[in-house]
Length: 406
Image (cartoon, rainbow, N blue to C red; front, side, top):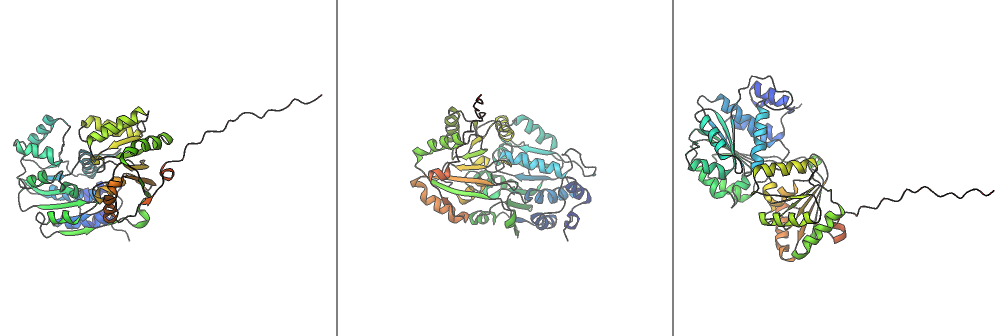
């Protein structure tokens, strides 16, 4: 017999909102995490994208925030602005604020303040000031949040709940210093939930001093639900990679694709090169304004662009079901990065393809990725890696007929 959200201990209003939003029954991660979170336990949870992990913390955190006797702040930290916006959408859905038909439940509405770079700082500061001292939800990237803490605009002394989503990324060299500094401003004791699609041993070690007697949860997608992603590697030297991409997209210019590179400068340069080859391409990275990033992703989703050249900022949070091809322009440094990159394809049950271009100098790193990600990439020849050339349509001339002889 299937479980229901009522069995998790959620309030009737939140159960109704979940039902209205199309969550007919809790997923395994929700069934495991919600009761533990409602009981005030710290949680370390590992669950793949698409298993409902965001709602697994949103629903119980909302329940506790609404039941709190004093005004409290719920802080959700994520590594990218795309994830800020996606998480805010889930919060609104669980509060019955989105969809064609809003729910009729009596669940109170709570202010959601989204803090990230590239957006109007003054508007964010006004929201923080106006909601200070009231129950509220802060969803933030570390850099912008630390900026407001430093200016005294954001006081986290009333934060009794902390969620770190994609926590493995928050403890990489890119964010670790900012994340640890923010933690120093949070009160103790507090409830801390750490969620991610992958939980490396190094990340667990860092979290050990942050969480208190946590419950560890790990949920995997059933094998039959895993998307079919064809994974291969093509050995090319660095000076051959651009020519290969031109040939690849020349044969299949409308294949919805993401090409991952390491740096913002590489993204701009490679996108410009492919654009000169008359391909519908654009870069996507952290130096673009939020409006530009939003419009680029919208154009890609709508089919006005077919190729994104992206840094790893897009590997966390870009959710477009129709991406059929991921190309790693270089071998990622971490197995977790590889898994998040290729996870942009093969979504919503569709098939996908992931190709890694590997130079001679990158072969050692490739082996490390294969071991860490527990995959064995198929070695492809040039022709195997390239899409089939689009055949020229045969002429449909009418057959000639000889005039009948008299």
